[in-house]
Image (cartoon, rainbow, N blue to C red; front, side, top):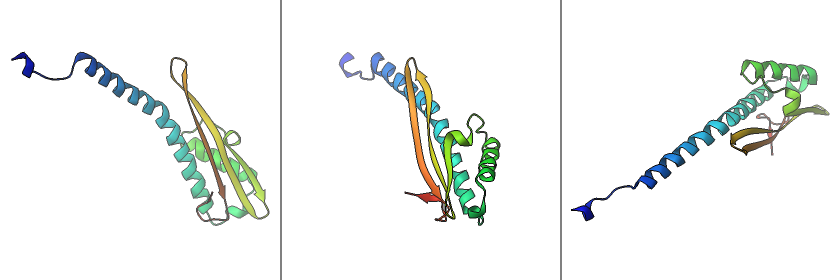
Length: 128
């Protein structure tokens, strides 16, 4: 009768629970980082869809972005830390370039780097 009984061993269950816990820990650490990037990305795309984005002064554009970031609960970063605002002729160019570092466990950190460029030349603001 014993040879017909089958199932997972103690170590298999322990390994499965540990793997599931690791996946939850990594997603809880990395998820908010990507959520903040997605929020910033959508803010910039919506700003570049505005009709008069070419006429914005850089200071006013930066101040408006900063207030939008605070409204969207991104309070630990400043616009100057995340992106470079510049003007080339009539075009407004925003280069988003920053990295985020979070502690995962022990002496293991997660580093996520984001780099994207937006310009007023295209309607969606995105450039390759």
